[in-house]
Length: 114
Length: 108
Image (cartoon, rainbow over all chains, first blue to last red; front, side, top):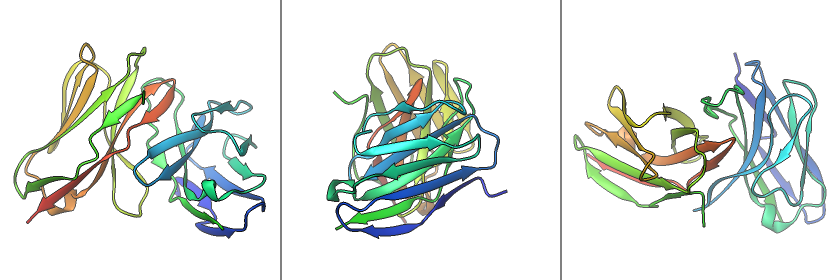
């Protein structure tokens, strides 16, 4: 039982390059989330998907796009990377019910944009 | 104004003491409240959730919620050096909003 799997774990990009961060969960959760974490800033929600086929913006969506490919997979795309997007990115999943915590996080992707 | 506020710390307590971590949140139709522990370089780990006013205990951890005053706290009894980590408060108003975390140091 892998839980939430993120790939890659590390990535270095040059300004202007594009990339897609992959996330998959095997817990049959309806809701999935992408966060970024910067020093002293806590976790900030980029996008989330309450259920398969739906996506919504979070606090900091600019410069990102997402795809909920199916119930298991939720990808995050940087079309033209900028140094301000240097961060640690976490994917998470949860049940859709109101009381469910975003309790299952992936191991994170450490991204540097030069 | 941030949705969820936490003191960044660090909060230092001696081994065996009670650590008290606090979190305040903005006035919304709040639904659920969570505490996460995050070790350096690792992903957050859910340790407590609370939905109703009052206290909820789980082992050495007690979460306290006061919706009228808009705060939620986490007490860690008999603190151990292994409890040294950053503790993140999160509130669910449909989406999740996280505080920036409080760093806890438990000194042997």
